[in-house]
Image (tube, rainbow, N blue to C red; front, side, top):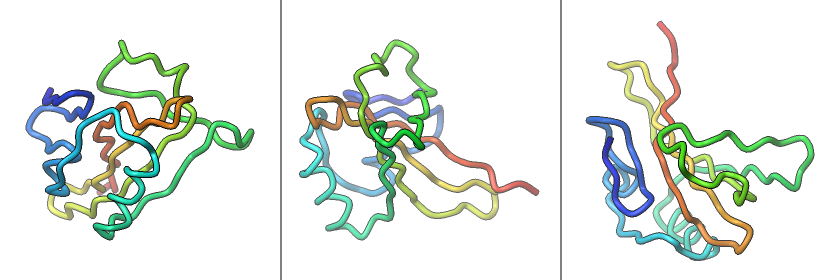
Length: 112
């Protein structure tokens, strides 16, 4: 596992900062993080736990993270690797203080 101060990726996978070639140190205010995404043309959607129809997925790479503090999650899209048949996705978690405190890769498999 590759990790830099709360920005985590699986073995041989790029972290969020490596994939998008951006500088970021956590924690960071949500508004600043959103500006980073928008300013770099990065596609995302927000999942908000205050919406009863949405459930935040639990982190996969770090089980020791206090997920009860998460209020929102940014699902970030980073393109598709057609050869490996994966969609490159990242999850950025926002705590109750409005700070992005944890980011991990969460690749989705497109199938055969």
